[in-house]
Length: 326
Image 1: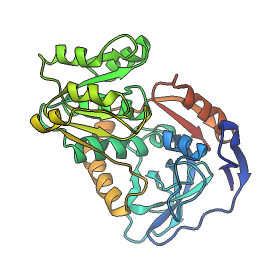
Image 2: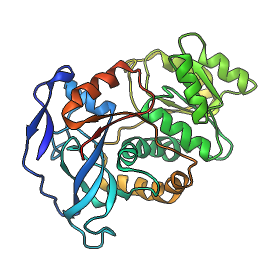
Image 3: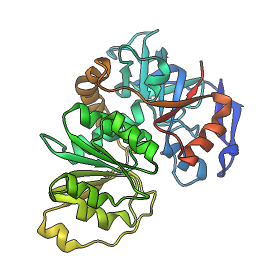
Image 4: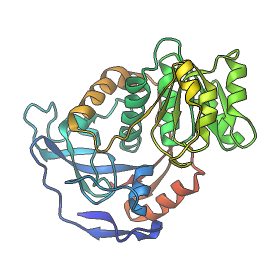
């Protein structure tokens, strides 16, 4: 099969087309003929040599795919040969064939094509796990999304809005702020010209937000503490601004704040299976009803994966970047 391999750690052009053996599915896995594969920041970190591949996972990048079931452990899977699915993979998505645990495969929501479906798994699993499971956004609580036009951002804004929450989001240009608002955010905040703490406090009568989803870390943390409401929760899923921060532990104690975070790739299949069940029952109907819509910014051919990575690193995109393989 054709695949993209990382020839050595480095810039996008280290991604090269190659021939690899078709993967053999293990017990509990499906073999999927990949029609499209989503691009995510962890793929970039892996290419740079700063994101280790878990033991037993493919060294081929790519954590989310959509395509046709062509083999694997079908017994009691709920799937059959020829079914179209999207899946969260352990790796191997930038290829014509990929395996994924049955429990991490979901039917493509009605009304979506394979490119749109390939843009879902990584961000939807991540957002649901962190915003709704880990820190429990619920009721009439409010959410601030840092990086509102990233793949994670457009997903978090839409899910939270569809479930009835007030959402605020930061972005780096007026165009991106307006895009956040089109997706459902009450206010897009230009972090280059506005103080997100002041904007959020003004919009919430001084209370602050209940939950912040952060992909930045670093010197954002102290400001985020000030932006949280009492009993607020701050959850990290990436650290683009650095992994060290100075903050007031007194505020954490006196205002009963929670600071947490997680990564997804190394978690066991059973953990991801529970997320998949929640997505199928609570989020897939919102997609099928049109309340949530995939945001695909641009597609590339498999052999142009380096160009796709260059676009992601430019941060000029709004939404997801996808490789179209079939």
